[in-house]
Length: 478
Ligand SMILES: [Zn+2]
Image (cartoon, rainbow, N blue to C red; front, top):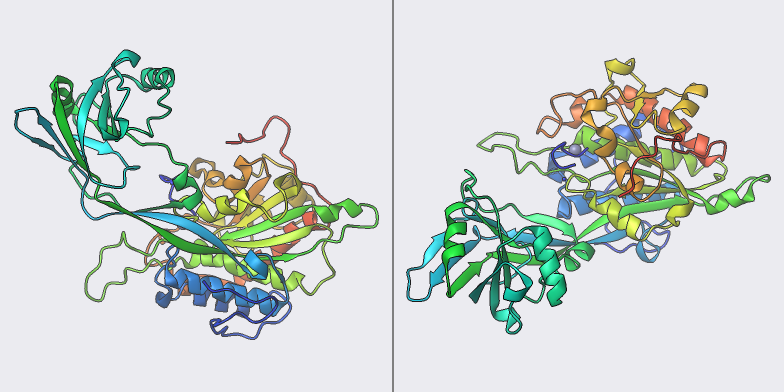
């Protein structure tokens, strides 16, 4: 589950056991069992997995573990090149120091500006620059030549800048050596600190437009007054490509005698296996700083693995079921967005994303053990269908927490697919803490919840229900 404020390889051979697969500490049987659920959670949430940060070796080991479980359960691989793993290419930006910006008027003294207080932004620029400064406030002032050797300070609003750039054929300013814009008239009180590293989908990073340097307060005044000057900018960044993986398996639908066309439709069942390693936590000798993410979301992954294993031994579903265990949820739904860029079954024929997120502890608000709540319960026909079928799936009791928008389902929703999350998160205080440990989960509750989730899924995989948004309540696409 994402923080509210964020709402921010091994190749496998077809059908073979996974190369250098981690050991599975339980015998897998073709049914949902408490022992298997617990074994999956204990593997994923062990301290040795170091909190499964996206792209980390420990997270990749977890991906191989889950791939091995799918393989042994007899599910068809749905990842790259006939494997269970789907590569998620990421771009990692790291800062070695706070960015530096310095202004040297001709014949004058250099002013060094402080990152955070005097300026911020400038994320798109990879290398240190020393450029001639041009100050402009209209199309007429814009430089016509030597753009790459120019630091342009455009002294106007975003709208004014866009209009002037468009008229001058400058696009978003990509061809400029550096683009600076006015920030706040009063400097923010923030101190200059080194920005934290950032991961994003490589496909998005490449298409990123320029992010201007914003200049604030006294520094802004100096910039406005400087006629003829040089400007030095050092972003202190390095960019590297990082690989991460989703894990994907499928059960191919066969339709029904009455509705053979259901075979061309799919349901995507998701949970996220990444977590936040615990770099936020305060360390010290003997202090546990690992965010294990047992409830968030090893619990959901265990449910998805068990549902897949149980269904693999039943007669084939009417609609195809794709089981997708994703990376990068905690840092911006990256794994799911990657899947949605190239879905296994086209999104027009994807009828539901059913997402499992934090089902490790009972929630007294909805009646305790064995019960789940569904985000967006009133928005689609799924909640009422569960109620009619007497499945223990109830309405999300925490509308103010915006859980509908805080997990992978919302990425599906933004692309027009009905997407909802099953959870029993009771707002416990171990969320995003070193204390989210496997020992704190209730495996009796989880087993019952996994069965309830399976029943809800069957309503749709059998073809009995095609979930739809309630008229007038359709959530916004992006
Ligand atoms: Zn989370």
